Image (cartoon, rainbow over all chains, first blue to last red; front, side, top):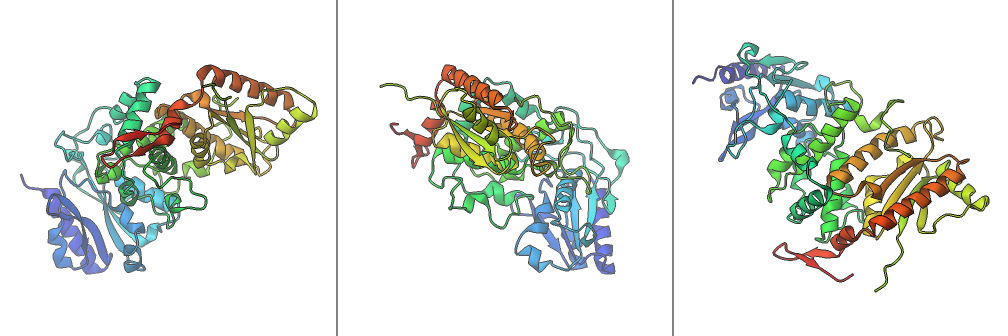
Length: 289
Length: 154
């Protein structure tokens, strides 16, 4: 089947680079085992860009990663985003990590992303309401050809919520006992950009460095708290995990809680307020004595 | 081997809850002595890492206390904290920790009696629930080379 959207993308990127609207463009390219990030500076290389249902990467993280941050400083950067990735960009804008006028966003009309394991469309794609990204500089693809993705995007989270307390405890302690604290989840997360992370602090040492279960639990608890109201469920963390811990289930549980209790979705608007840095007078307080 | 008494850590804000706990003492109220108070500048200062560190070091429960909404010395520290506490409480429960082990209270400098009652209530509930053995087992478990859990003696 001809991939009209991909052809359209390549055409547009060539134009944008030729005209100098963007100097470097971050998109998807073909890697050895799948999709990889591709940086395009030369218009001729626009042909190497790809777009298909395997483009699961969230490229927003490159905007705040050293040394790319320095390499690209001052350059007008083009970025290819799906609707969900755009939310991560919005969070970075809300937190003053990225200036909206310094980036050129190409939004892709998206029919859902396939999981790497071949089990169909990703759970997070279900019920997606940003299949046509709004607020990007331009949109590539035909919104008329959209297929709605039905289902519950929190199915895996709810499965754990339905367990009893002791079941949840043994699920997480046994799952987290696999953690080797490689911090790949932190490195892969587009929103974990602190130059000095609490895990590296040793005076005081909040997170044990020795391979203890309590240290693993503390790491994941604190990581999740640091993504509360920020996680956009891109799933980079879980994809990066070498021991297959579903770390995004933790952050997506918090996202679900915040959605249900505060009607807040991370990165919905570029000028929205960060969740934990703001409050309402009538926030829920039924849990306080 | 006799069971050691339960141990509860309370993080109280300097301006309201700590003064409330102080008042309980000044007016000679009696409450259970299983609670240890750590004074913080504001409930907004209380980080998730504090709670976990307390459990790690042997706390059976943690109480966090701040000013009533509208009374914060820094205007809105407690209101920002309120959101964080809700998320923390939900996440602890999601990970399988009993909700009783993390309590949030608003307690003013005039509410000595409320403080005494909260301490008694929490101590009562935690005594029934028992010490936080599952977390202690965690602290004692070093993950071995094959990632098996090696449980040490307490």
